[in-house]
Image: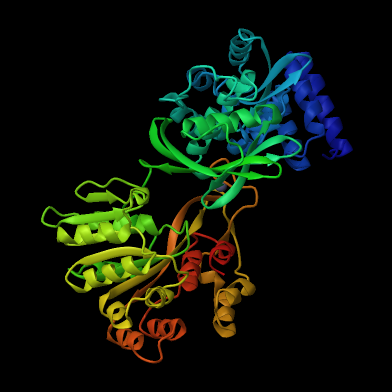
Amino acid sequence: MSQQPIELRQALAEHQAVAQQAGAEGVMESRLGAALLYQDIFTAQQLQEAIAQARSQTISLLAALEGIITPDQLLEVQAIASGLPFVQLDANSIPQSTLRLLHPETARMHHALPIQTRQENDSTIVTIALANPASAPARSALQQYFAASDMQVEFVAAHPQRIEKVLKSRYEIDNEEGFEVVYEDEFSADELADATNAGPARQHYADIFQEAVARGASDVHLEVDPEKGMLVRFRIDGVMHIYDTVPEKYRRALIAIIKLDMDLDVSDERHLKSGRVTKRVNGREVDFRGANWVTTRGEEMVIRLLDREGVRLDIAAMGFSDYNLQRLVHGYSSSHGAIVICGPTGSGKSSTLYAVLSELVNPERSILTIEDPVEYRLPGIQQTQVITSLGRDFSDSLRNALRCDPDVIMVGEVRDEMTAEISMRAAISGHLLLTTVHAMEAALAPISLIRMGVPAYQVADALRLVVSQRLVRKLCPLCQVQQTPDINDLLALNYDQATAQQIVENAGSYNFFAASEDGCSGCTSGFNGRTAIAEVMLIGDLEKELLMGPDRSALNLRRLAIANGMIPLAHDGVNKAALGETSLSEIRRVVA
Ligand SMILES: [Zn+2]
């Protein structure tokens, strides 16, 4: 805050005196004038201009300002005039439990949002953000609404567009079927250390997971915080974010409720367990897969969320560049051979596998899968789930499957020699085989199959195509910031000095952007959603020869593949950054 020049204060005082005499919104004008003196919303010159206009045209200062400052600035001035603080609304910082205090219909009617609550002298005070702070009817209606449940309100002003956005994104899904709380009965004393905490803990359970689904989180981490209770973190687009803290007194009850829901033994707080449950959250079917473990601080849990309905299985929409997509399509447009997708856990390889499978669905083709577990149901495909505890493993299931002689067969993951060998033989004997291998780069996948014990000639014969992929976060187009590429990022991504230099010098012809540090109401830390980057290695005659010969190594195979047109993963990522889809530091985070 800075004080405006003295002449300006005088001009303003004169204007106020005149306005008050004329009775033209006198109170408002004087409050506005006083507030404006100490605000940094616009320049002294703009204010001077507005005062002059207000006086010459005998209009209010607010009306005069309308033509001079931007709509955003005007909104702030309106807020000041109505005596309310103006807040920059951050959608992600509003807890779902707070939003739910106000009925969506009422919220929409008054363009209002409850944004936080606090306790003061035994009463709850709700802070409401208003899009139109001057609306007296809205204020009194909301006061009455909350008085009915013994809550007091205080108002702040916020940007109408931001309020609308939250109303759309956060309330609409809430409107439909909410989070189903399964256990309506009270817990027995055996099940919970303190049964009186069950109600609030159950509410926390519902709030946390409803919110996790609404924000598209893939995992929820519940960690003991020795000072506060239970720290709740979400993994969104592959990156962890702190969501909330559950008070210590509900910590054990919360874990117990989740374990009960997943059919886990609640009384056992010492041993590692994993379980699952399918729930309808915000009107969609979501699989929860939880595992607990015990630290010296107490019992913790990680729950993976699998949104069965939120998956996009369109191969063209996964983010592959046109060049890579063309090579990929070429790979699976054959009646036989093995297609291998690799990458670390969470790199999106199953999504790619499912997307390719759904491309292959055709009434004239028989398609069979062997999976552990079946992640998505696809129409037109026979899907088999391997149940290891019943003594069936991948290789047994695969042998059975081959007796049905399918055209296309998908094996969830090749993990052992037996499965690897049967898979490669199937690919050689006229089946199109799709699978994943846990390997960090394309050239390592064939090598690791050979290391598992499959004869090199079989691997060479079977393989048609290997894809290595990662998921990178997409920049939020609403708040991304233009950026000149940092040469160190490029060098870290395996460019030689000269090429890196060239990219930096020609930065003007690309669209390099960085994520805005704080993000906006439309994103999480400047990112929104994810896209795939990949390297696609076609196994041609030269590659086959190399795999069978004495010079076989991942490095030699990689060099050969690049010479034959494979764009390395890191460079595919930089191409994406140059198009403004993601940032260089994001590529570096994921690849380097
Ligand atoms: Zn944003």
